[in-house]
Image (cartoon, rainbow, N blue to C red; front, side, top):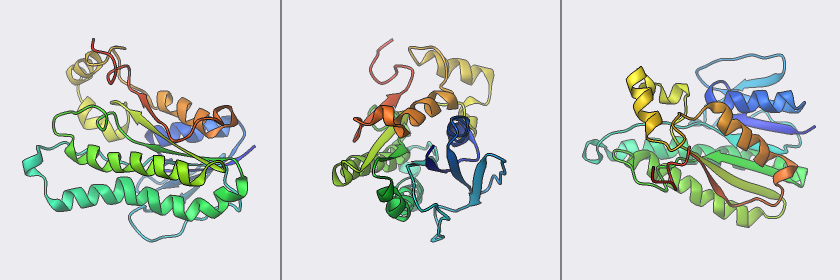
Length: 228
């Protein structure tokens, strides 16, 4: 039984990861920002990744998952410098803040694992994705750098989903026509689910993946590597 911190664990992918870990009998510590949540099995705390607050952490952590993100799709010429800075703060600096706070507890584990979330838009160019692809690309670089720096005691990996059925993507899936069109873009002909991402995240946190570090793993219905 381990201790795991899920930042952004109140909804979507983060919530599914919390439930998967709790089902396995682990001690789960999770944060929420605007979507307040309580649970008999999960230790929730309010935490804003854009502020300088301190996390309430156990003495030892076996894993951390950073889930916060945004999807702001706009033509490049309509974006301002402030948009890029704001997105970078949430997607990248927020992860830096959490990992730095968690490091002492992660080091005490001796075999800890950190998982962050990127996007397929880093690896494959899409229209109007310059904002999210830029910040998540930085997060992928951070993942590989930290994997090198902290091996063999702490592993770092990133999951790069394609479109997933979460509140974050609700505007892209707001009608049956949109759902059908987006599903058809993927070789597997469906939209990703939070459980698709949670199953891989749970695996990467556990001992069964102890020889996997510094990787960016596409969970994308085949859209990155298959031309259907």
